[in-house]
Length: 395
Image 1 (cartoon, rainbow, N blue to C red):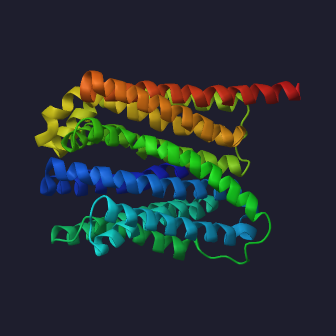
Image 2: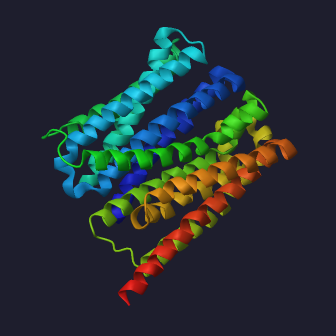
Image 3: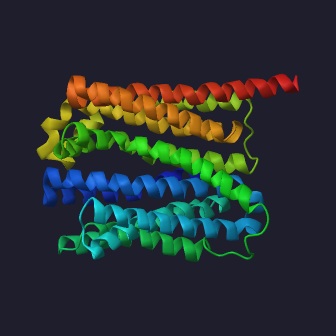
């Protein structure tokens, strides 16, 4: 399991370094703060749809892998529908809001559809517990992004970067993981699969909308240039995504196969690990975050300094919730996901709005930190209640 974790983190690191240390700094230099801020906003819209659809179906398939072959046609059908919905939603946005040409709108839609399919198709490697293939997928995707930047450098819309990178990973998953191969027709219990997918997707839509809500609120309450400042200032906080989600995915795979039992001792370890992760990354980030921004975005360093610490801590707490959420998905009813995310949505928007109106960008980051901390508690408490309930029944 340790090797799996290393390979999974390695896959994230390869892509993260390519995107955050090469492509996005280059884009920022060519586009300027306002243009780069617009890129950050549109990328947020793409990611909300792609991650909500793709990861939800990914997790449903990993959690129910005992009957995977019998339901493969169901997953392929749902993935196809979700890809079409993602494409059409982004196409409509491009035309109606961004006033893009038809061709650019199609490119934006394809970028989102390929990202969604990539996030879903990775489940095949997790079911196999084959993290070498996940590492290779990241290599192909990073290469595709670099090729896409080449076209962007010579005048193509930046959407081409996402299209080529995500399509490369989807093609690899289709070939190496047979992600879109199905032996049977839809078969039995399709309604059950669809219901659970819709439930988890609705939860993830709220969750991912809130992940990116900070940049939307910055644009709405302040301006596009400050979106760029906030995004750059919290670059270190996003590094947590290199470590926590891959470890969560490894744990989820092993729990689903029965290799790890979720007793009280294991729950204590996971929760303690989450808290320890928050403290470790925050302390390290006091220095590392400043070094990163100074090297990668020297022109924005002074503007980013005031919000680095509180902004990065808010990001770290949020990503750490994914570890506890893995326990909640496994131990608690799926409807808990929707309840938690809806409550969190209201709290987040209220806290961020009040903070931004009172103290500007720093206040918005503080509001996000408060809301993310409460979300962590809203997940931990039900998990412990369920563990104690099961222990009582056994006794």
